[in-house]
Amino acid sequence: SAKAKGKNQVVYCDEEMKEQTTKRLRLTNSLYRALDKGELYVMYQPQVDTKTRKVCGFEALVRWNNPEYGLIPPLSFIPLAEQTGLIRPIGLFVLEEACNQLVSFTSQFTERLTMSVNLSLIQLKDSRIVEKIQEILVRTDVDVSCVQIEITESANFLDEPILLQRLIELKELGLSIAIDDFGTGHSSFSRLKTYPIDQLKIDIEFVRGISTGSEKDMALIKSIIQIAKNLGIEALAEGVETEEQLQYLSEHDCDKLQGYYFSKPLEVEAIIQKNMLTPRN
Ligand code: C2E
Ligand code: MG
Ligand code: MG
Ligand code: MG
Image 1 (cartoon, helix red, strand yellow):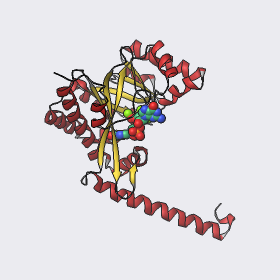
Image 2 (image 1 turned 135 degrees about the vertical axis):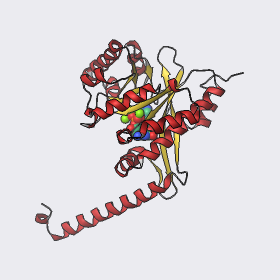
Image 3 (image 1 turned 30 degrees about the horizontal axis):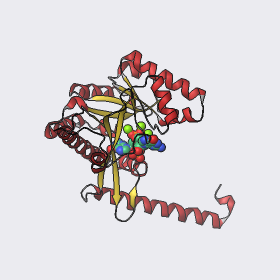
Image 4 (image 1 turned 30 degrees about the vertical axis):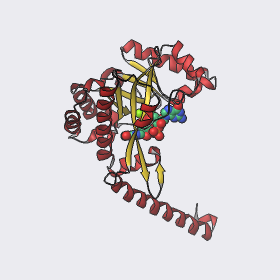
């Protein structure tokens, strides 16, 4: 125990914990104001059609640039946003930005693009979430059939009947639904049966296994792609970084690919500059 390690050790731990708590509080306070101050923005990572190797859509990923702390990665502030409930306004902000951006891309380029937006399970618990999402879809005048919601599986919450109800309502709005990080969360075959799912996103962890020669990872990738095929839904591989991974996923008929091999998340200006889309005349 801490006490057994001597008095100095105990004092040291307390100080460190206090410092941690203070830091967290300050970060939380900053996050409260981040939206209003315009410190949050969205980057877009291209998704590629495996057969044509052309960009077929984007995933919207939130970024926080704070004058004091600099660029804070989502993995550091999304959990905080979820704990404080701030993920609700933040998530809706990202959705609205992404829908507006899709409308803008569609007016400038000929491709029929999809836009994927992460939705926290905390947001799905909100009883008015479907209404709020519908408002955004109407306000932005986006082609709803091109918008996809990504949800990550987590323990027990997914078993609540309310979540199934929400997903059905989102489908009724015309949205598509993807399971993010598939295979690493609390996936179960019964949810694949019950939930109205359109896409499985194969987690980066399995894709990494292609490079390290992990037979098990490769077997799981093949199986996930087959499950998607047999269910008549799409498989997309996340975190594709190498030619070897691309080859493997292509050979095994994974529908779509996303990862640094093609592009990291980009700002809109960079997407336009890189000529990855075909301008309208
Ligand atoms: P995610 O939804 O699974 O997003 C994929 C993450 O993998 C992104 O990290 C992306 O930049 C990163 N990534 C993409 N390709 C590669 C690759 O080839 N190699 C590697 N190593 N990484 C790659 P990011 O942007 O830092 O986001 C992390 C997570 O934060 C997301 O994981 C998602 O769970 C969460 N997140 C991001 N934006 C939002 C949001 O607007 N709402 C919610 N609820 N969560 C978000
Ligand atoms: Mg995602
Ligand atoms: Mg993911
Ligand atoms: Mg992930």
